[in-house]
Amino acid sequence: MRRARGGRRWGLLCCAWMCALLMLGTTMAEGTPTVRMIYLVPSDRVIQPGYTAAIESAITQLQIWYRNEMGNGKTFLLHTPMVEIYETPHPASWYAANPAGDFVVWFWNNALADGFALTGGRFFDPENRWIFYIDADPACGQLTGGTSGVALLPANDLRGLTGQQNRPPCLGEPPDTAGICRWVGGLGHELGHAFDLPHPAGCEDSDPATFCPSDSLLWLGFREYPDTYLLPEDKVQLNASPFFLPINLPETLPPCGVVSVAIDIKPGETPNPINPKSKGNIPVAILSAATFDAPAEVDRASLTFGRTGQEASLAFCSPSPEDVNADSVLDLVCHFTIQQTGFQAGDTAGVLKGKTIDGTPLEGTDAVRIVP
Ligand SMILES: [Ca+2]
Ligand SMILES: [Ca+2]
Image (cartoon, rainbow, N blue to C red; front, side, top):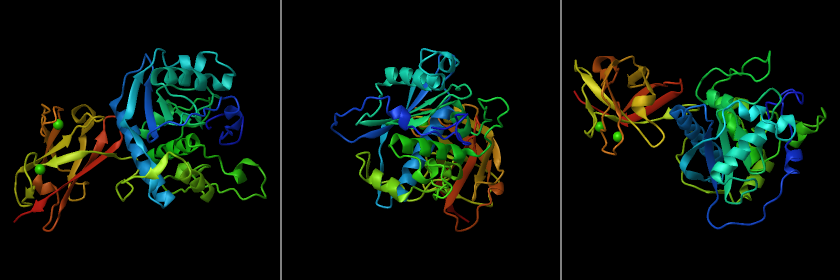
């Protein structure tokens, strides 16, 4: 648990007391258990596609990060669709204000009551770990976090994942201005709790003589993500978990906090020949996906494209989106001035960089063939 006031300096409260309040489920289910990412949208908030994309990006990275840490190819499986969106019956302010048990757990209890009712989620679900993001803010002192197969993350985490200004729940508290990676790390930490990983014992006991691995993910290492680690005892526990199994995933950890997009340089053509001496433009399509609406979400003016992706070569984006890959979803096509793309003989890839409307960095690459 975190972000609570009145406890430790970092508000990291042990979850054991809460576990004790819950009934332990005992039924084992068939099939492979998965991690369910739920985006809860209160009745007075709108669905923000950028949030969906950011959650997907964060959990996809963490799936690879955990695999790399485990060292034996094992990680957790994600549900399909990766992010499930539910509109709740209550406005955002209700979650912090509706009395439900002790004040500190009003937000927790209210958000999870709605979340469970909408999804069928529950504590100690043998088939699923339930990770809820809700676009609502707790009051100062109210708990969020993870325990017992469930995690709850509030609006600040959604703001953080999309590069927006944080809003501290407590008066006088400075906003958390750490970058997007810290919020991916925050999800990794709460996900760890949802897998029943505890805080490191040496940190919980408040004994200065006991070594506290403070840079481990399950203590303060989430702030340094991806430069953090799982403790040996964490790996032993995860290795025995039915949620961890060998999964084929990309070798390398994607850059933190970047939304990966599919692009098609010269849509409809393969390979993609580029003559660096040409005085013309080159079209690049940014392809939409199930959780990414390129025409709606891309900040067109932010786009840069070329041999490194940093080149300020944007000429214009086509005003009318078109479906360039015939998947019945409209894509965004933008045009770049070839002489400003910096391509050189021997280059094999073109890189597009930019941001989403809500500020999350995005990046995509496609093959190119440089021709004289
Ligand atoms: Ca192409
Ligand atoms: Ca399309």
